[in-house]
Length: 316
Image (cartoon, rainbow, N blue to C red):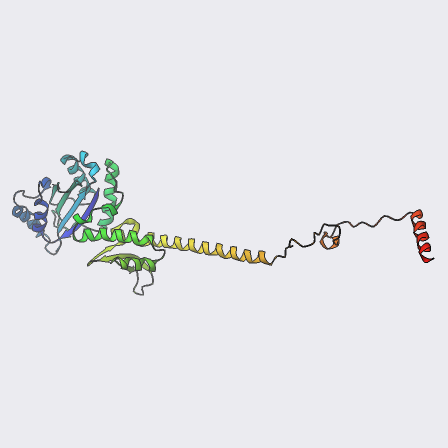
């Protein structure tokens, strides 16, 4: 279940659209004289005059459901959900009609309402996109409706104008993120796909970023209007994490290289080097400081006498 919000100036044009589809059916209404489009439009226009300063007094919401939910979505159940949605969105005490369409695989209905309520006051649209996401999520959980999985699978050929552009931007952002690890690369990849990335700043000095916008074909959307995952905060956290990973790998590589150079400077014995432990080597060089050295055994007296006799014989 998703809600698509629109505001406009012409009740006549909106009514012609929602009632002009094949098998269009009015499920519910309040404060509107049902009949021809002209009669319904006149009802809306009369209340609109209570606050003529408001130019865009037409409220239009399309509630769309997944095909998996179609067996459950009777007219009564769809009406119940639509009315509860309006209540949670603060669309109360005003004129409206709810019209069901059957022209797509996705069950859906259209809510047309007067943004000028019965007391002549404007129904607030403050944070309506964010509230719409929260309300639809709550209703999906409450009634066990199917959650959408991947916007990239949406058939954009059936969409028009701004809604189609929104899905095209979604797919472009998704593809661009696969090939980028920084804001600049991300911006360049989007430009290749015909999407302009703009930063929204908090101050005139443009030193602190507040958000981002994606622009294409004359349409402009906030990051969160494309997807909650495409807000400045979430994307910035993503790029910072990737940058930290790259830095960590670079540091690890440098430490490895430095360690390799140190190992090369350590002297080692070749195969032909003298074994320090053989009998011909000087053990004092390799022996530890506290190693014990051994003096030769003293010769006895008989051995000394024999050596003297041998020397005498040679002298003769």
